[in-house]
Image 1 (cartoon, rainbow, N blue to C red):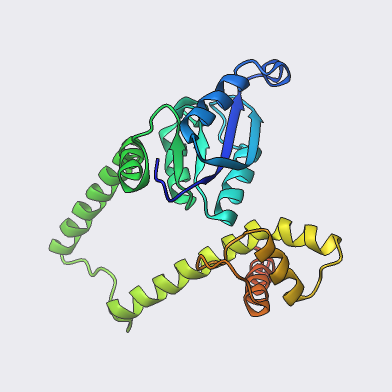
Image 2: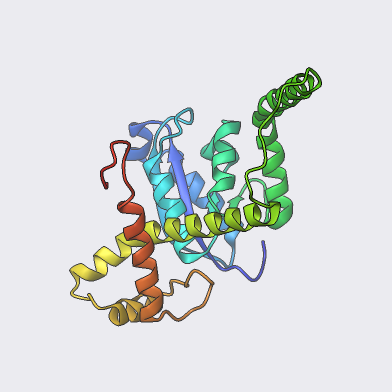
Amino acid sequence: MSPLIDRFVAYYRVSTAKQGASGLGLAAQRSAVEAYLKQGRVIAEFTEVESGRRTDRRALEQALAAARIHRVPLVVAKVDRLTRSVGFLSRLLESGVEVRFADLPAIEGPTGRFMLQQMAAVAELEAGLISTRTKAALIAAKKRGVRLGGHRGTSISQSAQAASRLVRSRRATQRANDLLPVIEELRRQGITSAEGLARALTARGIPTSRGRAKWSGVQVGRMLHHHRQDTCKPDLNGRGT
């Protein structure tokens, strides 16, 4: 385990309500996580009572959000406690959270992410085969004289810049949505100004989007702006949500 990381969010899962109520299996998971962390500490933990086959797990989404907010890894006792679905592993890789497994301590950092990507690669195989067949069909059509697409007046550089802006915007919106429950809790406590919220977020040890320890009122305002933009997007009927 990296010595630079000493805080984690823990996720536990049991398959039945009976196991959840009795603690059967849950205690063993906690012990495995504690043994793996050694000097590290769990700042938040989430327990799910759900079958491993299901992918709509509310507690896991909350755990991932907490890990993103505090910019810490998510730790689970065993790989099969998280999921047996390769497709679901792909979703976790896209969540922006580093996942640690107590039973596989070698899965850590860039090497660990690579190993998880290999586990998820099977799910991408079929999509790759479809893409190959599509390209072959387009080449054959072009040889037959069929005109494909055309110049849209946009350079590759402009397209890349637009894609980069879109990625940054989506990340900012995701972080704003993750932080919203914390902001709402602070508002219920009477903290409503941007400066007050900034001081409260700093006091809670929640880093800014760039990893800085101290928030400013301007940063809080930008974060709330991203959330408002996301909630005001028009639906399929042209109405704001």
